[in-house]
Amino acid sequence: MSPRVGDRDGYGRFGIIDETADGLLCHECGRRFTHLGLHAFKAHEISADEYRSAHGLARRGLVATATAQTIADNARRTMGTKAAFIEARNPSAARAARRRGPEAISPAGMAAIIASAKARRGTGRLGTVVTCAWCGVEFCPLFSAAQRRFCSRSCAARHTRRTSR
Image (cartoon, rainbow, N blue to C red; front, side, top):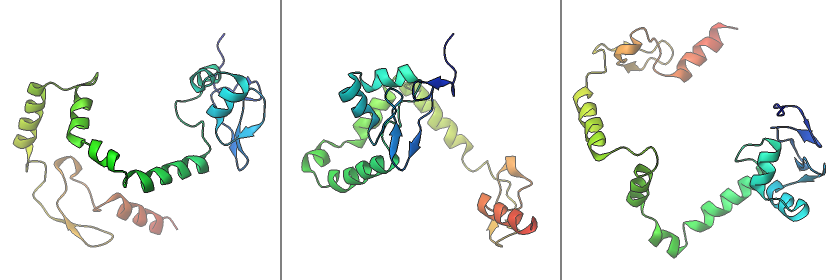
């Protein structure tokens, strides 16, 4: 019988990453580390993918939150200044590659989507102006939202919080 999420799994629980201020709990040895994938490779001689599949963990999350944030901040700060990165960056080529992927939309399909969007343009509004019950801004709701009294979810939430007290 295969383990279920939450079942005991070595030192941890199957499918759950235990993170504290000291780091992530290793299911194999019970110690805590900031970079669990690197630890699994060095100490237990298994790859991060093997560790994930053995313990039912998701693709992301083998790095402590603070460490992941530091890595992301460093990349944002430094990659924008690297000439090779800037020269190689090509958003249109990236978009084309995504379209060629497994769920790619054919050129004819894309043309149909664009034509449909153009045909619908301007037909999605009721044509009546409503004043937001919370902030007083005027807006024109969509056909599917004929009963809307608020311009946004945040105004509706503020109204709900105010009236529930």
